[in-house]
Length: 473
Image 1 (cartoon, rainbow, N blue to C red):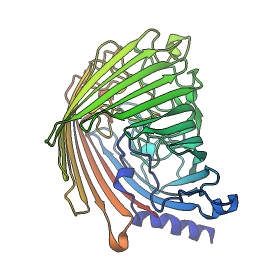
Image 2 (tube, rainbow, N blue to C red):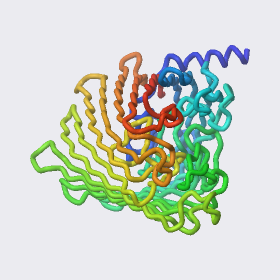
Image 3 (cartoon, helix red, strand yellow):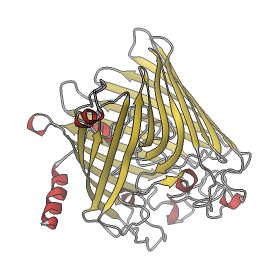
């Protein structure tokens, strides 16, 4: 009987879909991994009533991913299915309790622990659908995702415990089965009608593609660490000494045409990163322009007194800047994007924590870990009014440092071009709550790989296919 019930639940995942934003939420949007009826906002008369007035949200997800490398190199594919439940109580004297969890099954995949015979390297993308710490685990992968108490004031709320946030440096990065979660104290305050402040203290991370919770230092290095600036293998995984992250952001609408946001991220004994971003909308026009700058410097030992085990070099500073020019209507958002990471040193932000905040970011690749990078990207986001379709086409050129320049190239990524084609469909009527997404990624080499396939495998001269079906209730 147990096996029949399990088969029924898993089978449902092939029939159900998720809201398109849950696959790739924009940074700064509220973290809404679960949809459905919202919890009662007013205080209830008793603790018992608060629990009875709570809401339950369900989420099923199916994800197919396949990597097509060039002939002679290993290809991969994976089928993942899972589901989860979230429960939120009503409010009692301003307090609210939330708990959620998610399970994942490997429904049939290539051997994700297998190393490519030519390069000796392993799988990069598909393993992130499951548990990167146990690539051979095909069942019973589950994670306690949210477990927190929230206290509401008039214009603010405080959340203590396991939760989801979506900021420039720590974000959902939910391009796999589940997003990155954090544990700590988080404050969200609408200070004025035009200014929002959020931030807090983080002391735990559960990276995307894992089922465990880690301390701050322990979480840095769960994913492959690349190489040290001197070319030796990075020794920081498991050796970063850091307990806390302090993160704060201010978003303000200065005028009807201008917005600005400022973020500060301080990782004890590792680094300090600041970001300033502004957007200006031209008067009586559909055109707008944005600018961004990010500054980083090493704090303390950079994670470890031994340079070979440090995450950042002592005394290192990094600067990046970018720009965006856009044209936006009710149906179309067309942008021309630019970003530059200077040659001072590598831009570093743990990949376990989130995706790049750069205007030139494209799903399935990052420029984190590199310096002396110049990137251009054009993006067309078209959603016809009164239709369930959305089409996103983006193309980028990324000029990277030479793959042998380990001082500025942490992951051996050559210069490349990338094209993404993203189609999303939202069902209605009897199928309301069901959504689908197809994403195709193609990356082509534009740099010198010195006749070494290690700099091409799972990086360039490849295609990546993603098909996602999910359902929220």
